[in-house]
Length: 392
Image (cartoon, rainbow, N blue to C red):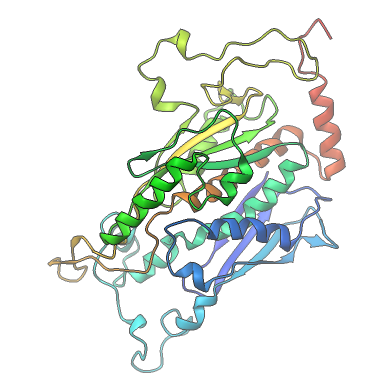
């Protein structure tokens, strides 16, 4: 079972990541993880925090001489901004009155954030106790864990990519074959250059207005073997697991597999992915289309797994919305905490990490193994069994 845990607050000393279930013998390095962390920090519309942090995960356990040991992998991720928040986020009780304005209680609630329900749930009188953990800063820890999951999947030929489909009212028209290197170079992670320019202008307009803007991301996992997940129990269905993982990302409000909502008005003959005759025993069960996003009955079907998700406009705005005060219930302007204007481009990278973690878990569930060679033997043996039953 591949699973991970994170700890840490946005302006605390740092983030802690524990990842378990990775077999022994996987080559991994801090540099490899750093590449994915750097990708998360990019994106047009990011805020000033990205000028402060230079994320690098430090591996402190579970790896020796560049190879995983099969034991839990522990990592830490320093928050460089902690230097400005030592009093406000101190572990010990304060000795005397606060000296930093950052230590003052936050009572002005932000609509659309975790502020109000979190304060009510945990009985807090200071909204900072909620917003620090509810911050998207935590997604850096997910990307660190996800980088190792991506490396594990790469060992077996599975590749994961992402791109932005829309920002605000601007929609991209992706080419039939996406140039993923060009997407990585795009400030908005868009495969449509004309749309990318308009998306940047959309972000600029929102920033000028003191507002924020959302978008749509697409994750594509290629070379996923047939049979990950299961139809036998509701909580083992791969599309359900992927959907839950993506919905758990900050500000995500909708997830679909394949075309999703687009197929609601179509007939069955226009939706199902027709299976082609098998001519290559090493590549059976190909489809003419991939409208259902590579899953059927809660299992991967051998086609690319495609998931889309919508990131809402961020709740923290330079021009704040009317709200209420936590103490009095009277009308105030919502609290402003430094944030981005648009999170869609970096959310793509977080989405990759979450899909990778789910696929890695399903992959190890299916093929098992305490070491990479053992898992490979199991995987390759299985692939020999998935052709037509009486032909090869």
